[in-house]
Amino acid sequence: MDQHTVTANGLEFAYFEEGPPDGPLALCLHGFPDSAHTWRYLLPALGDAGYRAIAPFLRGYAPTALPTDGRYQVGALVRDANALHEAFGGTSDAVLIGHDWGALATYGAVGHQPDRWRRAVTMAVPPTASMGMSFFSYAQLHCSWYMFFFLSPLAEMALPLDEYSFIDGLWRDWSPGYDGGWDVAQVKESIGDPAHIAAAIGYYRALYDPSLQDPDLAHEQAASLAPTPRPTLYLHGRDDGCMLLSSIGQPLDFMAEGSDVAVVDDAGHFLHVEQPDVVNRLVVDFLTS
Image (cartoon, rainbow, N blue to C red; front, side):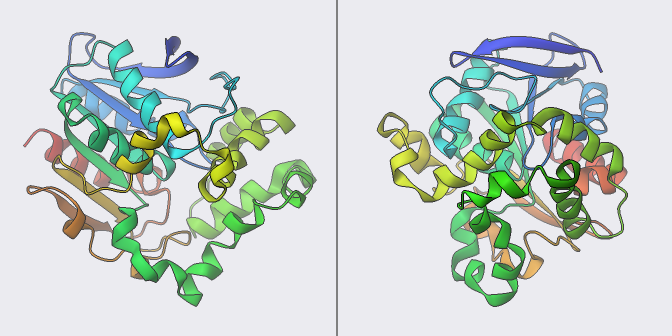
């Protein structure tokens, strides 16, 4: 895939693109620890379906620039997504696809400016309200320990050890049985240095520390917690070792009429690279229906 750059929301984003340049925009947002490379299967499928499919590296993930304001809250990701829609000349027939942090950005972007987006797809992280108290079960907290570890200054010391093998461990735990060696190498190229790993864990710190949240982004932040106003497909890997299937609640209760949920067998957290044929078919069928 050819790499390009675009400026949106005051930040230079690197991105991959597939499909006809005059097709409706399909914007794909990755999560952690991940990069735009994991959309390598879905982008061509979306292009074949007539979409101008674009996958940017999120803020703080090289080769996208580090934001000078140091903002990594969900509201900043929401503003980025809608600004990218504007930068790429998107119209009301655009669609938004997000995985992990990209899913949270998708809920917010569609909720904050629904007229920009016709449909959405989210993966691996359900609407926050759908999780409810299930996030605090012992089993889920056992999987989510890393989030709380990232709040500690010890995280910057631990993550770089043994050539950032921490990232390898997360991929093994979250997508058991999948050989993510190539994917992990791309992640390390993107965030495998002190400045970029600090940016990546900054997302988690901003989530739990209100002092790291910009009041100017309050509306975008709130939109990420509201029910989605556009039809949304939620996909979850049955063997996800990061967000347990038992923790997702009832996503349909918090998504617009016409939404759907599908559980992908033989897949964990990174379901779109573990079972690309299945995921591509589900996504394209939903977006073109």
